Length: 417
Image 1 (spheres, rainbow, N blue to C red):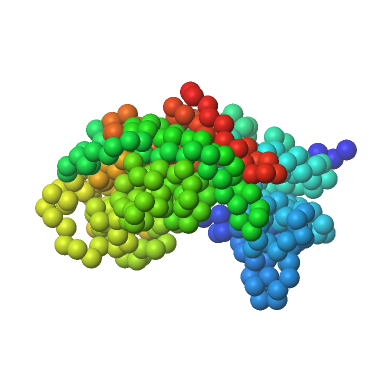
Image 2: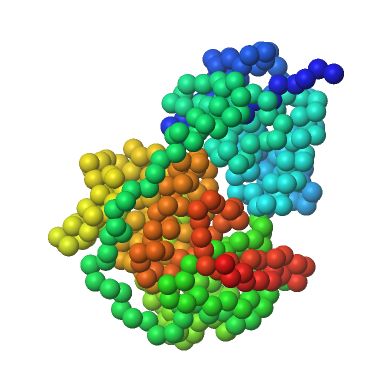
């Protein structure tokens, strides 16, 4: 039996997976023993998925057959990826090129995908592009790093691991910047749900959720794709009208007792990686942080001297003071996210919500983010709600709310660490 070659190519944040894919397909970058330009590929990537979604938009119907027999745009991100992989299996491909196989996929979905790809690898070469060592498929037998658009080969997985470990960056040792003035004291708990249930079009999403977030607590919200994590976040942020008429209390007030959505949001610092898309590409790193004082998208008010001083402290804390006038897009992805977290924390809000802050980062970038979050937990009075189904080394929440799906809606179980 001929032994197949299966390559794992680790991409640092200084490299672009689209450039690598194009270079492999056209032969600009060569892999020993594989004449890729002469072979038919099955490419699993966000770009491939986007093309299928555009086909649905233009022509209607389902561009990819899914187990739910629904169009791709009606599926969660995890369901979309599983449907794409199943579609590629039935193509007459000579090899599989897999980019970010597990990104935004829950633990159960990752296990199912891994099982499928292991079967593929018995008869077809597999090339896996990845940003996290823990995502490496078990059958890989050749190891590379793509760094600053250069492909580096390693003779063993041990040497590959050693190189990656040598590139991990350490968090800074500066203290966390403190706010200009303390937040006004709040009475009662920050969040309290008493038997909260939510359904859409008679489909139950969550049922009888009992959950309390107190001042200064560190929570992680976990659950598989589609289990209701986003629904609970929208209830906490005040954006979901399903909160009316329920035993839902936000920052000491019952939902629907006369508060506005802005009364709720002023108590929350919120991070989501997509926030950056709403800012101008010319917004400077400094302006991004200063905008956090007014929770604005962009800077429309002349900042005070105190605000500029505190923004400078955050820039020193992040090691970015010398780059403060550069556009945020100038930074690597991990540092962009650190700036956005600083923007959310600049006032030390009662509740800091971090939605998938390490998604798509390499190991070094994820370690920086986790180090920053842990320092916020140690040195501030803000409660933290970290939302992700992924386990991260070094992350130490005190409590975990685990959403467990069922036909009658997800139930919540609480784990005390």
